[in-house]
Image 1 (cartoon, one colour):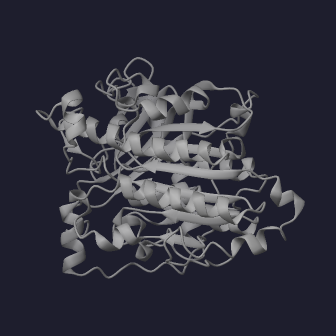
Image 2 (image 1 turned 30 degrees about the vertical axis):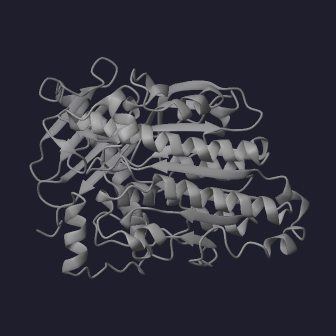
Length: 437
């Protein structure tokens, strides 16, 4: 088991002065490791970003980041809602393996997280979070020395709040404090932005660009608003002279539907608009590029640890994408599996390759098969006409899913949360339906 958390709830700009007294005691090997900045944006679908071909100016700051980075064009999530997806991001495991499959779930302490691995490798670990599923009861704080959940604690209806500025303010305070402390200790900072999540808020300076007539207009304005504040963080790195020493990883947890398959919001299907993630990784000294093949959110922690010259967690299903970033032959990745296990209506599982995708409704037994090359938006179900291919993919999916279930069986310390009426009402306000209904 990885080292236990040393999590503190101090704001990230405080309690860091003492770091200067300890950083110089780190070994030379630790001093050579890069800083890691992980930026995640809630509910951000990749095809609403300029680096992924979107024509609206939603993401000029991230487009600039992408110009000097590796852009992964086909990154896949493990779930269409936040908790299981981000649990996969911190563990390198699919949902059935880490067990965070409902909003009553909590990540068991016995799992090894990305922050715990980096902490054990000599990193200072910090996070600023702004979503209820990143609050302490859900367990994703494991391994963070500095964990700023003030935005979560103060938000009773986080869908009505605007938090991107505060996330960036706190992130910049941490960077300033680290620069002031000096020393060679590398750091890992995770910033999670919430604003594109519904209910979409109108930002006056964005209305003229995107309008307010449609939900999608407001959504795009929210993305642009968040992009601007992410730009403040990236500019802050440059202003402190940290750009050449810092790996920047940008991704999301899931997408959003705007009637692509007859619905709105997220958490209800396993289709492309909900599972396709942006993934942009900038490594100092590496040439920019684009990778068209399918990769997975579970590959992100293995990649970060590899870039930090640390081993992946023993149970991780992910593989390092570092060879692709460095222009070498990449790993032969297994297909991506995703899951939606909330109630009878939302009981689905999928398997995705670069070319093909199969979705199975586990209650009805009805499969769907899509050609991801010719039908990326998944509008034409080929399963009735290609039953043999569908069955072969379902058999492969069953094998991968069983391997994940076997991992979960080894973690006997997981305890479900006992949520009361106020917590359930708060989640309902965020668009989540009680999965025990």
